[in-house]
Image (cartoon, rainbow, N blue to C red; front, side, top):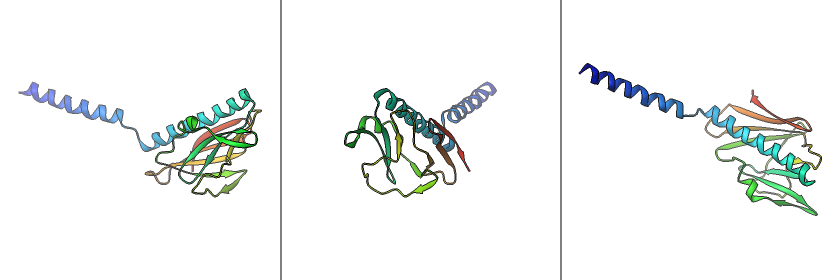
Length: 153
């Protein structure tokens, strides 16, 4: 009987431990989504150099799209847009130190632009999870060629 009780306790502890290991905190989810954004922006800047074209990301209040400049206008790249995580995310963007209001519809002009020489325009993008108030992860271009990410206070 004691052996059975020990086995039940070990089973319960194992089930709880697996649940804790597999679960992700909201902060971890936010950081992972922000890192996906950072990787995608870095990739776009690399593609801009390789293809000698400008690439950009346009934001609305609830969505984002990746674009490429093809004379004389910007064209949406829907296959790359799907790589940007937007579900449960909210954001605010500052361009050159000034907050930019975001519309509800796309206007066919990107907010973030990677130029053909690999530079990206000066920006800071604060990302938040909808269910996690008060915790913000910030991506920014402090130099024209570097995108950094950090927790925002």
